[in-house]
Length: 148
Picture: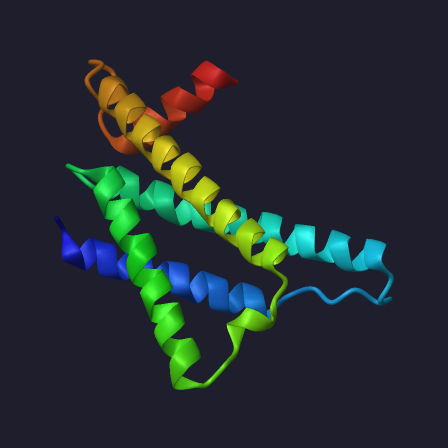
């Protein structure tokens, strides 16, 4: 297992969650509809960032990408829990449904991002083996032209 890669991506996951929390969009009104819509927009943005981090990890890992992704997620979660204890922040004040939603969203990002990274790596490997592809940039250009 490449621990340098796992730790760097765990730090990226931790940083993404922290930035999402700091930049959280606050609705102008406190109506339930606005609060829920704001929460879903924030969750969707965080989902896309987390999926991108997992895709990058899977793309860069030569063996055991699922183990690397799970290790990065667990390390990031451990760091979050440690920081919450260090600063005596009570995370149990959130409603259980929001906590469950956050974990389901994170797990979905892990699954989708890792799968996307593996698929991109496989597609690029096949395209690079073509005689007219010289680099990965050529591979991505060919991939875009095939789908476009």
